[in-house]
Length: 165
Image 1 (cartoon, one colour):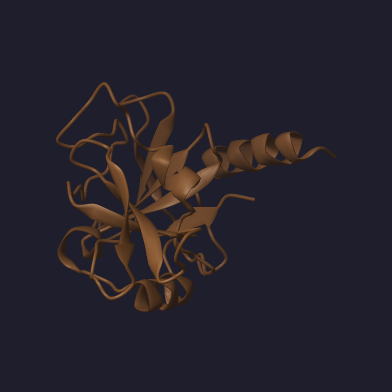
Image 2: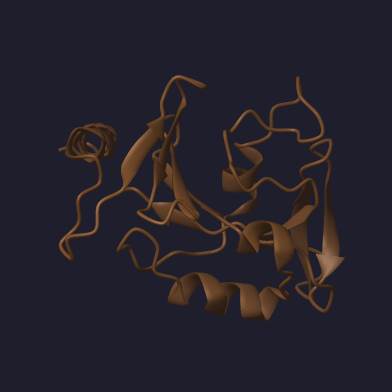
């Protein structure tokens, strides 16, 4: 079965099942009309959301820590890999291209059309190191969509991602 077909099948299953997981936790679909590209799912406490990007097949973290906690590159990876959201493990720091896929240059403050409840216009880490110096990593500014590199020792914001496949 082709990868594209597998992705489409998983997205259909997730949407139809309304994200019901083995632990009995279910996520309620709270917004699908905001943008046909994104579907928002909320946990029971409504403090933790996941955003399904139907275009990329990725699930995005949408929790309070996204707007009020800074991370260093080395702690960002540990935080994501230990996170459990929607009964899903194995979250990770997004690559440069994955995080850039959320940028909408027709928008600013924030520069995204993704319907995040916990939205910040700061600088977000990616898992992509600079080719010229591996002590620097790419980040993306969600105020206007600018990108640049930053030293590993600088704390920035973080939005974890999960493969839907």
